[in-house]
Image (cartoon, rainbow, N blue to C red; front, side):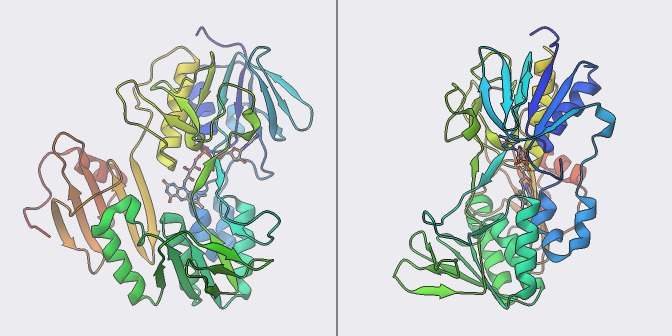
Length: 387
Ligand SMILES: Cc1cc2nc3c(=O)[nH]c(=O)nc-3n(C[C@H](O)[C@H](O)[C@H](O)COP(=O)(O)OP(=O)(O)OC[C@H]3O[C@@H](n4cnc5c(N)ncnc54)[C@H](O)[C@@H]3O)c2cc1C
């Protein structure tokens, strides 16, 4: 497209803000409207399940600055998109016309509660984190549903407070993402820290109204002072119903973050990358949201970006072990090489796969991100030592 007169971004978070910053960096000086629905504006989500669950003081460092970007902020949810008239309407009744639109509405937490069942806790927003932290202040025991990275981070925060913690999932910790080798290490680490991981045959339901436990597949109930559901996320596309963009799996984008609708782009957790050569899918991680925001900005201006619309750098922290990953996920099988000692949480592991990009994991060892990325790109194994 030619240089747009007016740009509208829906979703005031890392993907939307990365796009806004990139638009300005590329010289776009026209009107730039940012439509958000959270009172706090844009803030970092990754610390919510780490520092913010442990201390209210950590909230002070969350905000993403944007005062230098000359944005027109509208803090009211977008409720409708008219792709013929090229307008976005908000709940407050404002109508924002666009020449180029970025949808960056992220995702919401997947919920398990039955209709009208009250009191389910999930973790997606700062308000969610505050609610969980306040409940943890008064709790002695916690059940976390889901042993993915988010569930294990919540379990870690609870364990750090000395609470009795049970994690329930059909899979061992982080197995879907990090594969059996690291999952087994994390299971052992959890056991050593007194965190129970209960593997169940089928999905569990929530017990009580308000919720106070989980119903296990055999029919018995586990109870705790606090139950937190960490069962994945759902792309936030509800406000787009009636358009060609809406779909339960997210908004399909190509390598330029273009959608099927002219001059409408999407980025971040709401998007599902479907490159021409196949592969892709959703990459609901912080680094990909940044990359897609930047690529979308270039595309909105009719320019090329040197970046790929995914960035496979990911990090998490489980029970005191920091895990940084550069390279494609999920992992399968044993690593090709291990430098250090995984058992004590001080290792760099490498997965080399014929014909594919290498993945390098820093497991408990402090390695700068740039160095980890460089290791993932290097062709030599880190060490000849086999695990
Ligand atoms: C607790 C937590 C911890 C995480 N930790 C990590 C981590 O350690 N490492 C990692 O790589 N990733 C992590 N992630 C994932 C990472 O935060 C996300 O990938 C990233 O936030 C996605 O950015 P986004 O801008 O696409 O979407 P979001 O951050 O979800 O932002 C979307 C924004 O759009 C707003 N919105 C939605 N609908 C509307 C509407 N109709 N109108 C207006 N606004 C709307 C939402 O309120 C939200 O503010 C974590 C996520 C969570 C929730």
